[in-house]
Length: 224
Ligand SMILES: C[S@@+](CC[C@H](N)C(=O)[O-])C[C@H]1O[C@@H](n2cnc3c(N)ncnc32)[C@H](O)[C@@H]1O
Image (cartoon, rainbow, N blue to C red; front, top):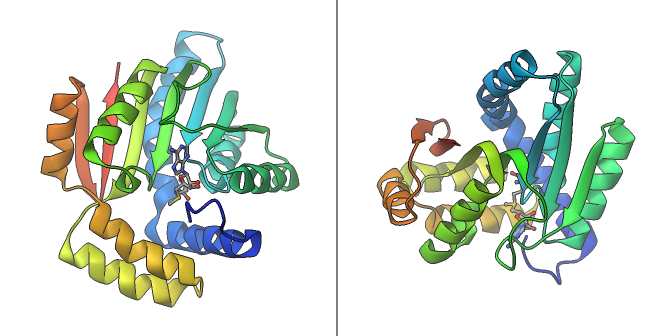
């Protein structure tokens, strides 16, 4: 899916397949559960508007869902999506407009430069497994340095069960050949919790919490 030469229809199909997998895995509720205490604390402490960015946002599904939940609960949030793919940013902006969600999208390569603005919270889903260890360190340091409150990361764990789930659920839930291929390759490129802890220690990032989550994933939370 990261191939810049991927035809747009195949890219769209793969992102739709990913959304189906998100629905099946309960991704949005996990991010909402992690974000809600921060939203509540900010509302009690000040009238300031919380800013939340999703890095590697794809078609913006997570942001759209969270924005709808936050609006329903009366939270005023500035939502921002970053992705290095122009196709993903364009699709995400169109989908947000169609859903009436107020979300800004920007084309940004997280490895090329610091994020363009400081935000309160960074969200990041199914992303780190694309990168080598040294790049993951750089990315996590950038997340820490670009936030005032927290970053929340969900990613795959490299396990045999994770590989079997990626192979079978990928085929059950979507017909996108890109998702079928990416699913198993992603598990192969993913980190174990021990490896992620080593990366955090080497990056000198403390105040973190990592928990295992269904299906063969981890959620990493960092708080300032
Ligand atoms: C597997 S998709 C996950 C999309 C979304 N987070 C989700 O969970 O549905 C990974 C996304 O990261 C983007 N991406 C990959 N490398 C990137 C980079 N260096 N900087 C910004 N975005 C990147 C890709 O374009 C793609 O949209």
